[in-house]
Length: 89
Image (cartoon, rainbow, N blue to C red; front, side, top):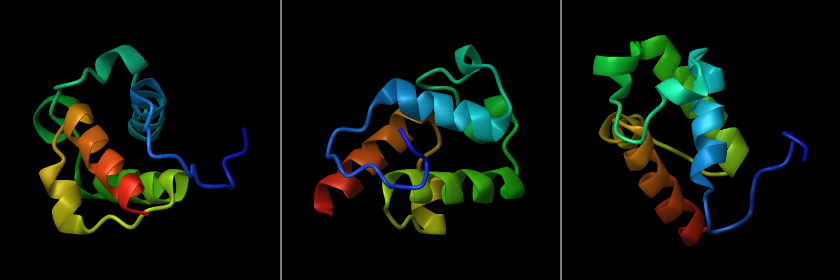
């Protein structure tokens, strides 16, 4: 698996997404629960949100607006956003 190429599948694996977000946020994977809110519970600030946005765009080959990212407040919501975006590609 290379990180240089975007995933070109409509199914977004929740555990791979969890691992990617945990890596960007420098957290243990277990801390990134399905419904933990990024800002309120995981301490995400604007810089971390930007890093997360860039990592998600690179990994999944989609474009995510700041508004979309603000609306995806948890892993479950981010998964839904990415699933919809990759299906539309």
